[in-house]
Amino acid sequence: MTETARRLHQLGAPHARARALAVVLAGLGVALAAAALGLVLAPAVPGVTISWVLIALSVAAAVWAVLRVRGEAAAAPIGRLVESATRGRAGSVVGVVSPSINKGQGTSAALLLAADTRAAAFVSFAAPQVNATLRRTTRRRLVAGAGTALLGAVLFVCGALCMANKRNAIGVLMGVELVLNGANINFVAFARFNPTFEVEGQIFALFIIVLAAAEVDGAVVCLGDMPLVSAAAIDRLIGAFNPVEGRAICVPTRRGKRGNPVLLARQLFPELAAVSGDIGARDLVTAHPELVAEVEMESDGVLTDIDTPQALAKLAATAKIDA
Picture: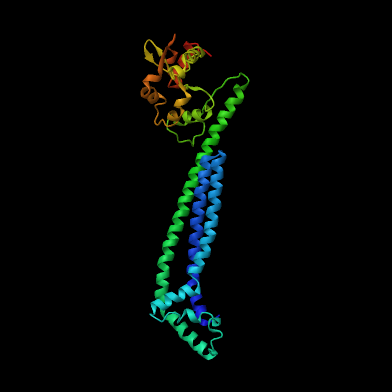
């Protein structure tokens, strides 16, 4: 290695390492973002497959980019920067990086040594300016790489939290299904037992209902604070339900006042999943008056909701809850 090549290597090596680190950070961020996507889409096989493909592509791209940035900081590119900074002749520095470049041209060792000494002096003279130029690009890439890694980490944490919520909810559904399987009852329930859940009112429950009820013709959205709703009332709703004849939303009434639960046809599930706020299926009923069938009930159970432990205790002491 010539003295010129050694000094060029010393000038470019720190930037090569820093830029390689920036690439690794960016690749890590992209891989974490892809993993987050997989966590959100799990357990759907296509979603998980796409996530793994993206992770593999990000790793391959990072390897390619690392090799590329190493080439950017090699002796020849740095030598051209030195030539530009010193306004030297093209090849005056790059041409003496390797002695073999002039092999066979009759150049003596003494002339090569003189050219190497002169080029090495140019490198030392231009080093501050070239280093400043390289440093600007290196810093930008490090900031971009670190930012990508941080964003990927945030997305991964969000994906992990989403996965944890889904696993808890699915566990509740599986437990309810095991209990009710023997009775041949198709039932979907949601229990907000995890204090880390941060959901908006009924929305997460409704979303789980939509997912779990995907293979049925309709879903009865029952509220947990209405214990006086009887099996007979739900039977009346089912008896009136007929989406083909335009009765896709069955709403119980008592003396002309609408109550709960509401029976919704499968065609409305996508809209049900998009409901926001603590309003349940109320907006769907309002948005589709042509699909609503009001079903008169024989008791006030479809209108009575219990909001406090005291009210529940009072109800238990004075009323018989129909199972």
